[in-house]
Image 1: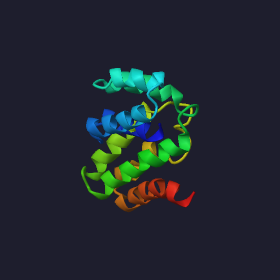
Image 2 (image 1 turned 60 degrees about the vertical axis):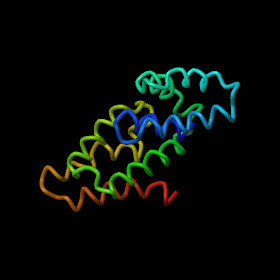
Image 3 (image 1 turned 135 degrees about the horizontal axis):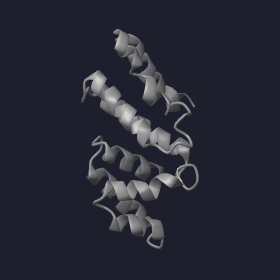
Length: 143
């Protein structure tokens, strides 16, 4: 569920394809065809808002925060390394993503860094900005 939840979140921001989410959802559903939540999500497949509204309250309960974060930050790092967006735009996306996350855990690192890692850009310090993002990406590699 952690990967599915991360893919849904990333899909909402155009950072992952809907197809990635659907493939993971189908895989989980085939493994657990009696799971009512997965059946419901299959029915919501075209609507990331509805899917996220159903999945996000489960983070910390059914969905492990650590596993969700690990999946989320792995994809974010890939996007960052591939330079798919200019750094300032990537920062804006991360800010919006942070606001999208449930408030129960978004003040914990590395999630909280999504809201402030781009701040050094406002005084021209790209190096510090990149260091903050790298620390966030490395969080799950060190634990």
